[in-house]
Length: 355
Image (cartoon, rainbow, N blue to C red; front, side, top):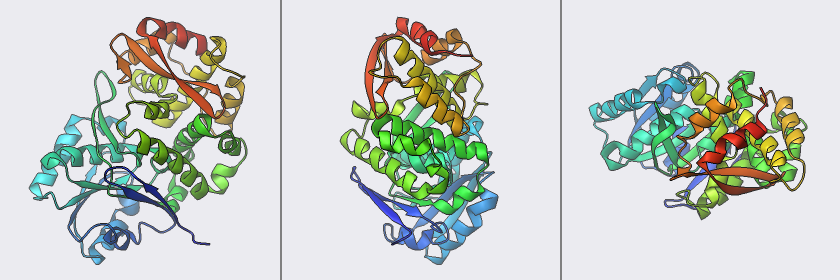
């Protein structure tokens, strides 16, 4: 059996997500299957660069690509207009054209930053995603959502740009600290709550650590189907925001000191408890979700009070007029979108809050 898994994402344009070991070492050859040799601008951060940048640069150059690199300080604090401007100026200085390409080498912040830059430079050039974290592998590298943060909240400026290809090197997972690996586990667990009780049950055991490629492939396959049906997040794709309304609020309240996956985990626990308390759940979900999160090194509560979270969430991009759309678990493997007046957001969060 091949060590590699390939998943087609039939968007416009369509692309393939390839999952397996050693893909960064052969990324030049892999990308030649999709792209003719061109100028490849590799965007990465200060954590990833010492680990993988030279490997990627060498592979791309050997395959005939002209390579330039841009490294920015690691962390959510760099996901802003200042860094975006620096990346855009870099692309212009290197004279990239519309036949060239940006490569996002790193986790979710890098994927967002590089993808957004590619989406707006020259009104759009190609981008490929080279995820190096579990979170970016199971979620953020697929689907074409790119964004930066504003003072008012998370991911409030962005664009849709489907990648030309995604190469997910599972060898990178071995370099992740436990808390960074857990960040990705949060998004994988979220997927199980959304769509597949059987997948969720794997996270109650040790499957995530035992067989990451299989878990990544199942999560990507689910997300690919959702994105194909709702590429611009007009309906079904909003379900992928499970745990994110409160999660983004936690990130904002912490000044982005709480990492995304940990914040989403706490947000998922809050909305699960609220769903039970308010009678929205068909069966008990909160205790099982909390136990699964805890087993995977993730929080189930937050130090920030309900009032602060509601205030932060009021700027969430899922707000429309005086309403906000919440993703509510009805049972493990089944969730629904529930539009509630913004005036009800605080009572909902209070119903699920635990300090």
